[in-house]
Image (cartoon, rainbow, N blue to C red; front, side, top):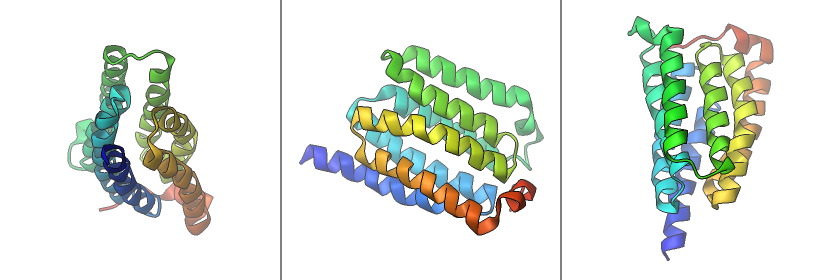
Length: 176
């Protein structure tokens, strides 16, 4: 029963990520992913996958900052992006569980760089690069909701590119 409940937590997080990839607005994308990350933090913690859980907390911090990018001008700074990346490196070092820990590090690192462009096209590209690393991590730690999420994420990103057009996404910036 415990295993079923742990997996159910992950499947609840999937819904938020599916919705996020269908948002044209970067702001809405970040908000939905923030909520999905919090759900997966809980699941990864229950699975004992602490590098993944804390890497997702870095995502939560990053996405919260990005929601305020127009209000807090310092968030746009590359120094802020570097601080997020340094926090990610610290989390990875503290929770090191061997080479497996590199998977969430690479995924969050790549997507952080993409998100700081505030360009929907580059964000989608960074997600298409980062998602496979997370997918492998999810399979290895037995997060079946996470694995489903990353599989759907890749498909959803492609749908959003088709829906909005690749070139039109290049022009999209964070919207209120």
